[in-house]
Length: 129
Image (cartoon, rainbow, N blue to C red; front, side, top):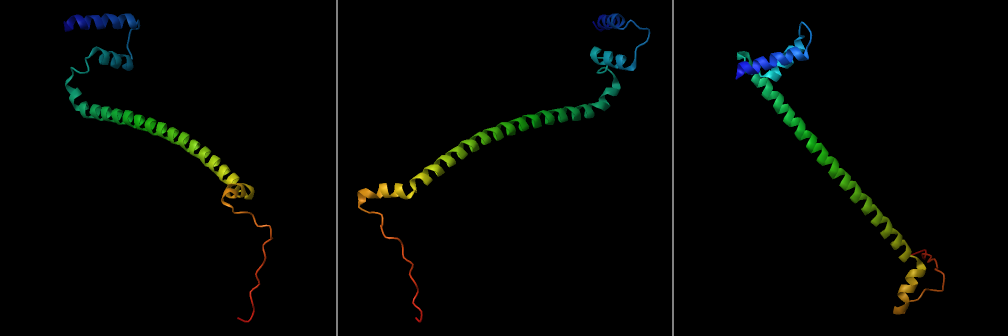
C-alpha cells in the first residue's frame, strides 16, 4: 500500500514540477503532505516544539474569543449608558418644570397655601446685644 502511495506521490511530483530539480521548499512541502515527515526517527525531538506551537495556537484563539466577548459587553454598556443619560435629561427637565414658582403655586392651591403678595424684608440685627 505504501509503495503504491509513494509511486503516486512521485508521479504527482513529476506532473506538478516539470523541472529537473526541486527546491528545498518544494521538497519539504511534499514530505509534509506525503506523510514522510512523521515516519522519520528525528521527528520525535520536534514533538515538544510542536506541542508548544499547538498550545500557543489554543491560547491565541482563546484570547481572540475573550477580546470579542469584552467588545460585545462594552457595546452593550455603551447602549445602556446612552439610555440612562436620556432618562437623566428627561427627569432633570421635568424637575425643572415642576420646581417653577407658578407650578408650585398651582400644586399648592388645593391645600389653601397661597403666594405671599408682600416682598421679603431684610431683618437688621440689633446692635448692642
